[in-house]
Length: 236
Image (cartoon, rainbow, N blue to C red):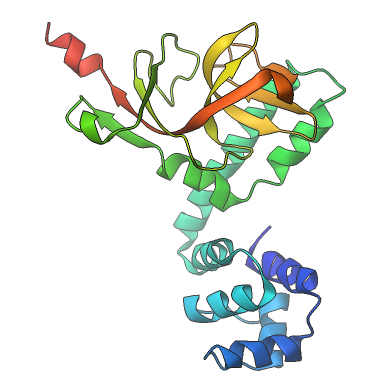
């Protein structure tokens, strides 16, 4: 979905009329009129400023950063819009191909739907928030997780990398996690969460996806980055 679709959905979910939204925005210091909001929804008006988008999303109880992100993408040069579109489409298409070849038919539609529903912002954040260091200079500042012993997460995370994790943040579909799974042990994967099950996806298509019951999984943390040891090892 683009800016106008996300804005329209946000307004619809709020159950507020455009006049009510405009009045509530004015109450928090941002003056706009209902006709302006209507033009934003139809695409007859260029995406609003950060200030206006923040106000509308706040009043409607929507995702402020998502609306601001979509507005900035739509207002950006064509080359930037094309890049964002191609990167996010590649992420979704690659993920679908991997899981479609490996997951049972019973759970596949649910997982595919969740992937389709991931916003461009969700996908971009997964990569931008992945802190990649080379060497161990900041070891004391990293909440260290396990070392990745195989190449199952390449090319995103190299074999031998030491993972840093956040143990307190809420994990959601699309995140990279460290999980302890009964009968399997500890693994690092991208996660897809359904109502009853959890699916773990490798980046390397040579490895299989794993589908398991929620009660057999202990999430140890969300992956926030990694420290590559390749340069360090090459010194010896």
